[in-house]
Image 1 (spheres, rainbow, N blue to C red):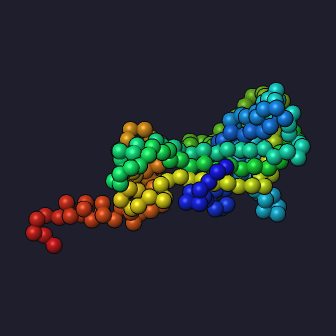
Image 2 (image 1 turned 45 degrees about the vertical axis):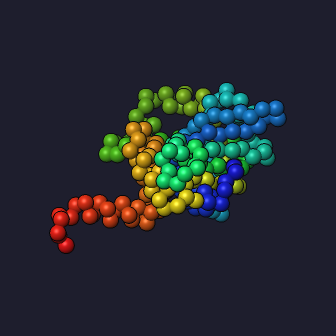
Image 3 (image 1 turned 180 degrees about the vertical axis):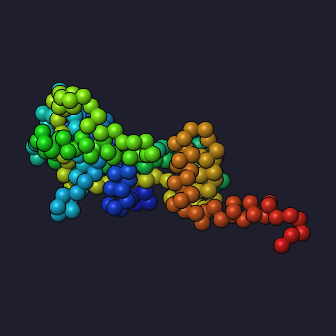
Length: 227
């Protein structure tokens, strides 16, 4: 993934982002064309600390023919994104751009045994059920006897050994404080959730750029003649 230095994320931050997202698009090359599938996953670590991503595919997915070899697969994990108009900057002569968060994980993939798949499915559902607390978590034990095993036969589990981690968080880090704050404030006023999320990320990443906003707000709240 092409990543200018301003936007490059370190390995730890990139893995944390991917783990928290838990959904991406896995892609492999069959010799003639790329094949891709969107899917949920969870991040785990081997005994030696090597990161791994665990996921599964439908048994008839053509990607399965490419698993188990030495070829590297790609798992692209994207976060929120937002368009930026040149009109929103303080400085003149700007151009349209797009802000986003993206992490690419790549490495070889191996097939899981039936027993490993059962563990993976429990861990995967537990990961996403935890997002719904205080709802009582769903577990496969709630299914009718034999139903879970029957459905499990329709999928195949896989694990990617992550050999390369690339992270790009393009949040206008290379812009001046004035332009940076102007874009974040304008995105924060948009109606779409992604724009507002990007605005929040920008504020978290560079709070000092908004110091003037804070001072002006405090002055506006101070009664005339007050101290």
